[in-house]
Image (cartoon, rainbow, N blue to C red; front, side, top):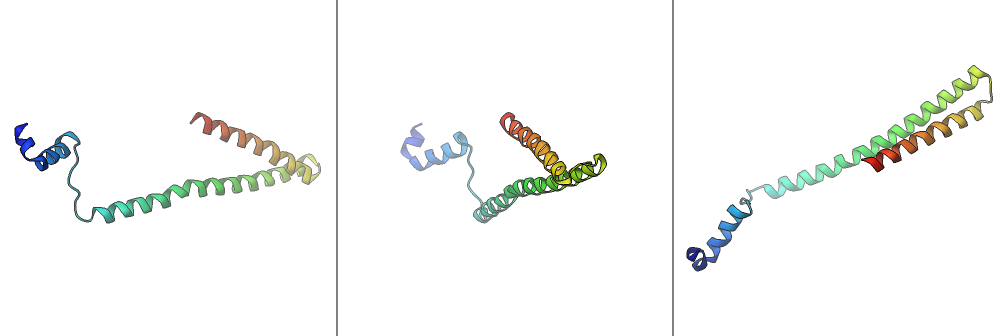
Length: 103
C-alpha cells in the first residue's frame, strides 16, 4: 500500500486495470464506436418499418378475403369487407397488445 500512497498515479492505473477491469482505449476506437452507434440507430428503425408493412399487407389481405367472402355467400361487398376487416383487425390488435404486455 505504501507504494501506491507515494505514487497516486500508479494507484489509479492499478485500480483501472485490476479493480475496474478497464483497458486503455486503442486508437481509432472513437470512430469505430461512433459507426457502431450510427448503424445500430438505423437497424433499430427496421422493426417499426416491418410492422407498418405487415399492417398494410394484412389490411389488403383482409379486404381481399372480405370481397371473396361476399362473392361466395352473395352478400353486400362493402359490408362483408367492413366486417372482416373490423373483426380480424380488432383480434389482431388485441393479440398484439397482449403480446406487448407479456413480453
